[in-house]
Length: 342
Image (cartoon, rainbow, N blue to C red):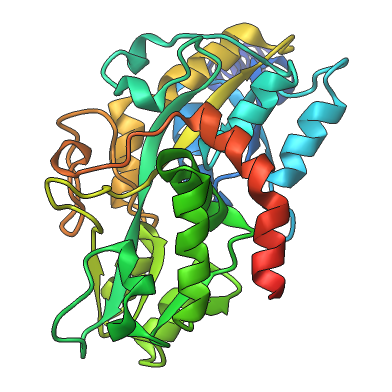
């Protein structure tokens, strides 16, 4: 090979190398990172986190709760790591655990600019958590029922004796819903409601999903479940209808369970943490979660939603203080255990 050809070849090789080097992705080790602990189902939360990575270039390291340790797993880990935080952000699938972290000094206040249009009842007044993308607690009713129940009081109505099922109130959103009733009604009325349910032959299931399936199979007429449980069965073509309960002008309204996002005190990556929180609280994220199979209700006004979802401002909702609901939830645990065991 001639010397001239060798020089030309080396120049071409150098140019190719420079082009590759300038366009290659930044090595993982040098990319900014954010660590998030997640209680929302991975199948729904992971695509949102991937979209954030693509949008910002910030690498997301996510730790997900398992079904066996739902919510309590990563919360207990956050509490254990309080003196040496490993996470930057906590994505809770309900605000009760966020309140627990606030009380234990694990979280730090942060008011995102994207939170200003979210109704105040879905935000901690001190900025320790902010809600987004909610589920409603609804009645799922079998299509064979002609005159459908429209209130949770159907559980105590003689007409529905032995025809209602409810998820075990020691777990999940049913616990929070019962705690909200104790907070709004007071102990005497809420306790009377629980005893009346027992007398009326209410059945217990292991979860909201099982309750929805029991209704869809025709074994029971109705159940109180999360809106995503009802919508998913409807989309599957199961013979059920979703009813938002207690919507009369003097009605109690339906209980709303928003996701909640929390900044961790002493977060190792505070700048990236705030960027992730801003993204989770964006209208874009709420639209994604509305059209996902979880079918969550946006808390921002004007976010596009699929058919079957009602805007939050069109619903009569239970106006609760989630901090007080968290207190009540702890307080009534012994009574709920006795109720389940009776």
